[in-house]
Image (cartoon, rainbow, N blue to C red; front, top):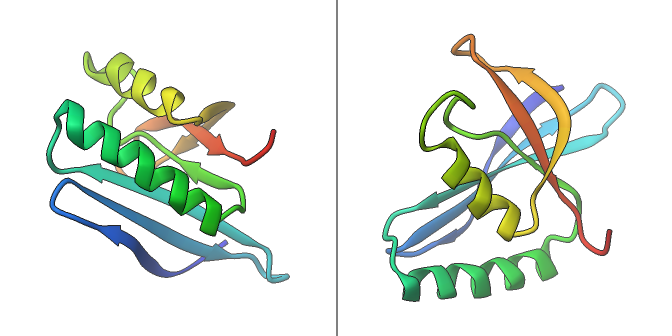
Length: 112
């Protein structure tokens, strides 16, 4: 797969949603999602969940994501609880990242 570009879908003072687009030789597309939380509070979490639901209505294709941290990082369980509460599920596949760390691949699908 070849990197095509990054698309910023939603930017606010509390969160940024971005998608890295990749294309295969036969045109198949893969979108790698990035969710950067800038401001963490109960009210921002409520807005993030609302914005995410609207985003997924507009972008219903399967999305993929990798954690920014290693599974050995003490903060990983908290990250995993957050993303699974948003509907992300592990694929049981590991991806060797550019920094040499293997990380679990997660997917988010609609209606599955």
